[in-house]
Image (cartoon, rainbow, N blue to C red):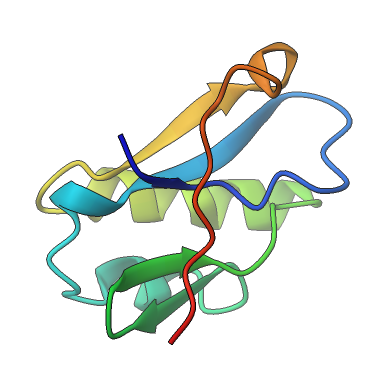
Length: 89
């Protein structure tokens, strides 16, 4: 299954991932957390992982308002198991 994880520099907690097949490009996540998500022609791209409590709250809000539930958290211990697919415009 295609994912966009951008898991670089994640040292603790969960990383934010987007299930690309579920994404309908509504931009709700980018509205809630514009520094973390970017809408592309192919879907939403995780620009970077949240680092502060405020960013983690924004990522959680994006997850909650996603109409297709395409955003989820992947435990960092599963980084090597989490399939990723980079998206290019």
